[in-house]
Each structure stands twice: as C-alpha cells, then as structure tokens.
Length: 331
Ligand code: SF4
Image (cartoon, rainbow, N blue to C red; front, side, top):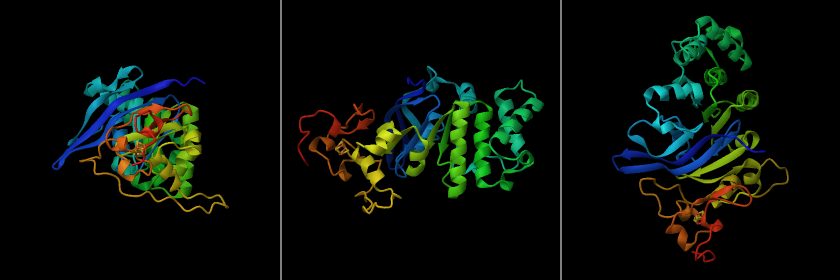
C-alpha cells in the first residue's frame, strides 16, 4: 500500500558551539515520516536522537543551532516560518511529550486549565465552554477520570501526567507527536498501558508518532519502522520486521545483539559492543563507527558512506553495501 508522506527531513544538521569547539550532534540527516506511522528512533545515549526530535520543532536553544537543512511538512519548509507561524506549528500541527512532564506542565495550573489554554491560544475564537467540552472528551478518551480535570500536576501519577501531555497535542489535532523517552520513567505496567494507548490513539486519530527511546523491545512491539542513530547519523532505517529479522549495519547488528532475549532455548551470550561512542567535537573521519567496527575496510576511515536504499527495503549508511575499489579488503 502506498504510504502518504507527512514530513520530509532533508540534510538536517544541528551544531552546538561549545568552548572546546563545535559539536556536530546531528550531521546532515535525511529521512521521511509517513502519515499515521509509528517510527521508533533508537541509539545509545548522546547519539543525537533527542536533539533531532527537538530540531524537528525548531526547539534547539543556544549555544546550539540548526546549521543546515529543511523540514518539509505538508509541502512547506518549516525552517522558513516566522516566530508566529512556528508557535502555531508547535502544538497545532506537531507536539512533543518529554520524559518528565513536570518540566512541561505548569505546577500552578489544573489539568483543565492546561487543555483549555492550549485550545484557546491556537484557536482564539473557541469559547471556554466548547474548549472544556473538547478537553473533557479527550481526557476521558485517554482513560483519565473526569474528576481529574480539576487536579494539579503534582496530584497525578507519572503515567497520568504523560497522558495529559499527549492529550494537549491531540486536542489540537496535531498530526505529529514526538515522544522523547516518554515512557522511560514509568514502571513496566504503566509503560505498557501508555504504549497501548498511544497505539490506539494512532489508529483512531491517524496521528504520526516519532518514538525516541532506548527501549528496543518497546520499538519492536509498537513501531512500524525503526531508525537507528549513531554519533549524529541515521545508520539504518526501515520496516521494523525487516530490520529486526536481518539488520544490515554492523552497529544495528551489535545493538540488537546486546538486547536480552526471552526465548527459552536462547543461550547465546549477549553481544558487547567494543569501544566507546566518539567525541563529537572531533568525530572520526569517514564512517564514524569505524573505530568500533569489526568489518571496517580502508575506505571506512577515509570517506563517509551515503544512506542508500537496499533491495531488502531498508536504507543503510555503510560501505559494505556500496561499491568502492577496496570492498573486499580487510583493515
Ligand atoms: Fe563498518 Fe565500514 Fe560499514 Fe562503517 S562503513 S559500519 S566501518 S563496514
């Protein structure tokens, strides 16, 4: 079935200007987000996945900046929006849920105040009565009792606060929700419940979900596609079944090999990735993974590969799958 494009991220880079030099946290990344899909974005801490999520809403604060690229959303370049259009875009068209919603919710405002304010900021002609009605429907849909509309954030559980944040995006009919480690601080039962609700919401509202997480099992369960990040690059992206069945990039293979399996007969030892992620003030030349890669070839430390679509469906950023003179030569 032909998928409908929601957003096309083209050549996006984010640079932090630090005292020890520029840090290229997101380096010339391109990928698409389709309407109604759940895209899981995974990778080690510090690989740039949260920075990428914030960059999509242009929420990079100094000393960081979006140093190149385009964010094409419904055929318009969000990078060209002025402050007013950007404010409208954030919330009405795309919104973000963070790991700790206490940092996003106002402790002095009740749940209904948050939702009503969100609606009226973006739709000033909506009356308070109508905004409250919509808020009540959404809160009920998210499985929070209506008696909680008058609660303050500190009176809610962590899972409820996450659902309120989700509701703020959905009540405005946002088309893209970026969930940045949204389930990380929750216990496993609440996490599973929130994950189920997010999936139901996707099915019901057709919203696209970019799920940024280090929880590979959650991505396997929930996502339609997976994007794997390493040191500021997307190194592999594709259908979640294809990537889990046959990961192509050596980093993806290592990442998946390091996740415990619950299969009873599986006595294989977990893979331990050699080395450390690179310092992004001085990233390695060529492929940034080459100092840790068991398959590295001479070209890997000289030239950066491109992210190229393979016949199996996934796109991979690795010389093993691209023609070059020393393809069969070992380092
Ligand atoms: Fe390994 Fe080379 Fe592929 Fe990088 S490009 S992952 S070093 S084989």
